[in-house]
Image (cartoon, rainbow, N blue to C red; front, top):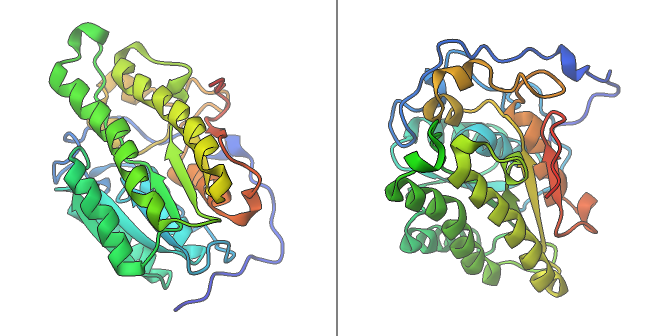
Length: 307
């Protein structure tokens, strides 16, 4: 296998305000799960760290399961984990195979094994099949990243949220996290970690994302409760709370006006890129954070996270 990339001898800090706002004008994707709702159909594709992220062996020979691992934050986490030396099981929504295959290519290009699992995590049986697949392939799970999420902005707020949408949001964002974590824990040992993707929406909910925001607050609560219950086993549980991050989910689920100004209201004046979030996952998965559990790390461009 290819060894982890070496860091350059020296580097110059990068001004975060010098990074351009994504060109969001005219972006419009099909809803999640449609074969057209993939990264390559975006006019301005996100940065997952393809040309910038260098690994340092922090996760050498570990096994990670990442849900929603085909695109956006999930792809960036898969790429950075692989470059840190981990093998990766990538779960993604059926129909988005193009993105899944590209993420697998990036993992394998880093010299690590990628296992693709197209699935629908709103079904408990599918969650069981995913964990069984990971355990059968590798014999253990060192890192579980509960990152898969569904949202659909409704400008009319609560009045426009159907029961069908509510079920899908809660089952994808909360039910799957409960099921997967419960099933994965028997395959995890001391030093393992669970990392859940929350959101700035957990503490600063947008009216058009009311159902999604409620699940993200629930993820924070789950993270802290689970951290307390498994600490004696040496398993850490933490969460990353992104702010506005440029991923295919944005043009696939938001209206034109919201897309056009996405991220511009942050103190840094722009949306973040997936690679800028993935580094927090690397930190929480590594031994560098061995005394951190039950915490929420905000990656928001300056928006406050007070959960």
